[in-house]
Length: 126
Length: 107
Image (cartoon, rainbow over all chains, first blue to last red; front, side, top):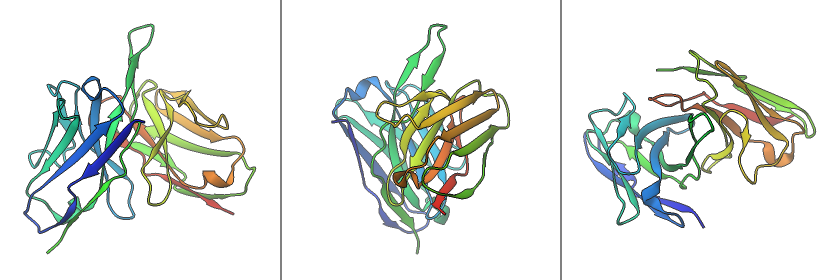
């Protein structure tokens, strides 16, 4: 069974740091791109960060750029999100999501998010 | 960043109704769009990718259409388990952006 399990969430003070982990199982982790997505309480979904299968390509949302760092350890089948300088507005459930893809007959690249982990709650408050 | 405008933000419908949700992109995104369903306290679930491709295991009452800037998710006959919030996601370029969501409630 393909599964993603997040951990590492909790209560942290403004300005503090936290490291989230996402443990993958049931598939060849090193072959897949991965993402982090978050959802503030009662709000919609917000994409946070992307990492390619090798880790060589990374993107961030402007709201976290310079404060968050995505990484992966393919030997450990794990994805990480190091979060520094945390703010109250970073309070959210953080999901990791696998990003399968395919190329169509014209060579165009399609991707999607499936599956998602169950999420881990990060609360930034004094 | 590409803005995704989803409408309506909520709707009330009855079991058996046909439901349509739309997403409009602020610029053309070819057909790089997915639809996700989220139930309270649960992770989102993929329904449709590449604008119109049905994810394996998703009931055929769900369908997607559109290309360029205008996209539609249709539920042909609403079932009790379909009451949830639905989001579109453009994956044309970074930063990826979601629509604000459509909450489908029981009438």
